[in-house]
Length: 511
Image 1 (spheres, rainbow, N blue to C red):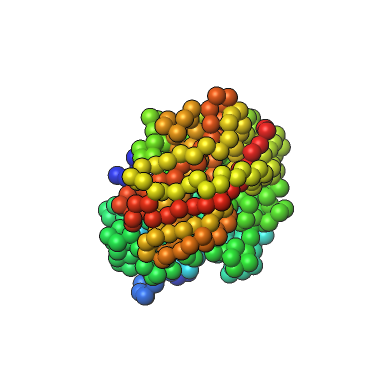
Image 2 (image 1 turned 90 degrees about the vertical axis):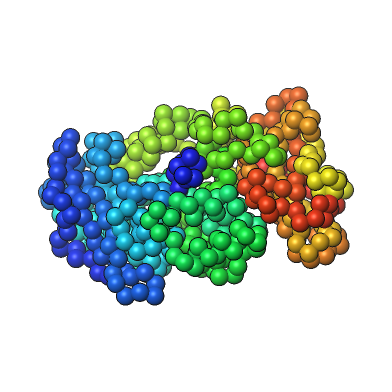
């Protein structure tokens, strides 16, 4: 899956030698080599799977003048990059680069197990083995290259499955720095929050995998059942459960390496909260102090039409006010400086380490904060429900000017009347309930199964945001029985859920 939704919708390694698909070719003083290596069979099969790659050796890289290496891979449904010009900013700076086709895509074989640590995790480890065998690649010790990684979406997922699977299997990772962009913490949270499918994205995921028959039958069957019924079968939940940082952290693992995160605040596939959780929970304290989080308006962005979203008119525009604030014209340039500092030991003037830097919804300001947890609580009383004709309802929370940057939550006592009760909630901003728009196009479900009466629920997640509420406008909580991202799987009975004694906890910041 690529940054823009338009792109999304549409066994052992012989480390002593480099297998070739075609003769090396020099372009712009970069030597390019295409090849494939063999990795583990798909589950339930016995034939090794080819993982194909293109290796870029920069000018001057030799056994006596070794260079660090940067791995790259593509988004879901894509393929590796073979043009040296695409990585000129890295090779000109003295890095080698290897771009590879992930299992099930491009020239690689097998099917995609969506970054499973026992499948794609092994693929990435074999790629690292191959890199470590190159005499011109700098090593910290034999078999351990000086290594970074870049890539977005699925190309961020391989970075985490590679680093975490090594940590699980050997107690340490050979990656020294990561630069993942618009990727996930938990696939279940992203695709199926509280078991409510994001149907538009599930459909896009399946469609993008069809040209190469990428998805195994169990996943196709699971998504078909989910899309048809709105209920997530246990086998699909279990398939996705291990395929992200959340599972590794749940099992006691954290990465102790610096990471530059880029995450889309208007991303409604892997929303802002997914990146915030990675930064807060997937790293050790020491690693976090050497890491940077940049949030921008962009990512996998579909417009929110009902309820109306804040960027409904410009859904594909990427706005990043934070990279310039941190001294770089773009996140790519900031990533280069990050790799230079952590792989080459160069003083690149990096600032903002250990903090969150979030572009506001208007796209013109960067808010920097050390924490994204709530700081202020507002009592709303017995005011929120989905009672009535089923239209979204906005309830006032606070008057501007104020700035919200982080992850708000909600407490309430919930009464439900149906068997499967769903409502969708988000923060919104406007001059009145009639013109209030959902901040950065994201909503999250509240789900209750069965009849309940005044059941207490605390810490209900609202979408993470960064927004300036100007003077003369109001911050609202919008509650809706439906949401575009979960088309067809909203409230089962209009008016089936009521919330009393509501308290909203807001991450209010003054910076």
